[in-house]
Length: 151
Length: 151
DNA sequence: TCTGAAATCATACGATG
DNA sequence: CATCGTATGATTTCAGA
Image (tube, rainbow over all chains, first blue to last red; front, side):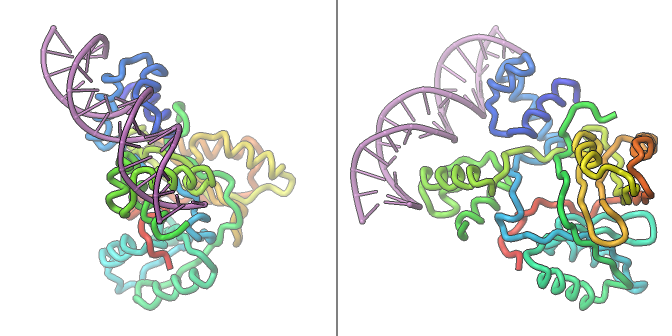
């Protein structure tokens, strides 16, 4: 993972449909060298996958919220984690420091959907308490490799 | 945006390097029809871009934190938003309901970097107060279109 | 890592329902 | 108007050095 790899990642992050020739021109390398580097980064897991960035609104997911969760004392933590992975509305779930156990990021279509979602967590008995913060607007939401200097 | 469009999005989210022929086989359509649909969704903004999903660790970004921000009473809110967009460490920034003004998601290499980052916010005079929550582990972090049923 | 050939693919176009 | 089949130019892939 050298400077050239990082530059390739930055270029692919911008547009992963760029041709190998195009990328090669930007980093001063041949098509096959670039191809080999991408293959290696994909194999090592540095590049997790080639994907598309979708506008949530296009999928009818106009409501974004963060839900803080404190698990009930008798809750099965592993069962909670397994369940989280199966719920489409939960796009992120992090185990965090501070007064709460988990922070989840939730995307749903309407506030009614959000209410239903919160109800389903409660119904499963995972919750000791929770707090929901609704996003009014998003200032920025960028990929991890937006730039090359991250000092 | 019908069922077939959503299926195409789901397939591209999994692997955007799939060939049009492959996708066409999955949705029962010709190469040209699939191509036209992808072109249309890209033009309309439903597909924002083709990109790669990068492992933050591969870029040396091993520390993830959420920072709650309450802007100072005399802070220039637009200046804050503009500044946020220029800081590589800030991967997300949302205007939220509740006791805080903004929730930011921050990725840095080390806790020292995190400390430096917090210092730079303070130095700019934006803050009335802030609270930092550090992520211990991430249970899930999926794309928005992971499935087709989001009811 | 490069060059060059071979295979695969995306794209454009006219036709069809 | 969306979809299709075909032709063509571009692109990825793979061999050998």
